[in-house]
Length: 112
Length: 115
Image 1 (cartoon, each protein chain N blue to C red):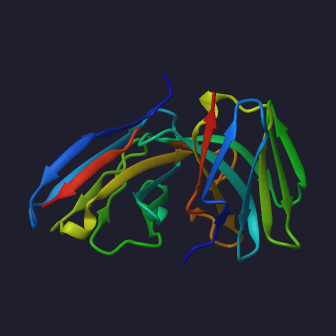
Image 2 (tube, each protein chain N blue to C red; image 1 turned 90 degrees about the horizontal axis):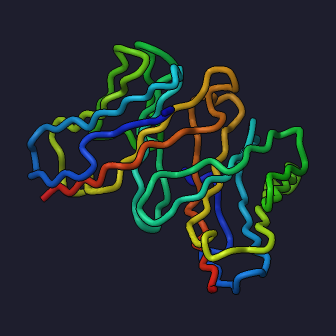
């Protein structure tokens, strides 16, 4: 079953602009995580936000979580060409402590 | 260097020929997991393991087996591979200090083609 749904599926912006990606999920969660994947490579963890947190920052990344709407957003500020990658949200549902469900991802292209 | 390693990285095989993809981590993680990634479907969890000798099914376990005899290793076994198992496979592990489904550390991936 698909837990995380991401929007948009693809995003193309110019260097220096901000990029926003959204993730929606269906069930109550323990935490929500964002990962980045460069073409065909392994995923790299970016940031984790717990269900009792509303916002978290890491460098140029800002993640918000709205548990009432079952949604999260990832904002990348002042994007760089090196940010070109696919971005995935993943949710850890309450009660299923071993399962992690990924969304289908947003493909971001940052043009120099 | 802390890492998750997978072998082989690329494999082309034929239907029905048993194969094993190895996964090893050197971070003393309790939790390990296998995922497959297919275009348009994202990553889907195959199996996971909370600790040695403890394994559980993910969302797509059919056609796969796993074992966890040692903490560092979590091999994925395809007893009779079929073409629909052609995919990119990732192994991941997680630190016991931060919870079982916290930050996942991913291996580089194994691209499997079943003819």
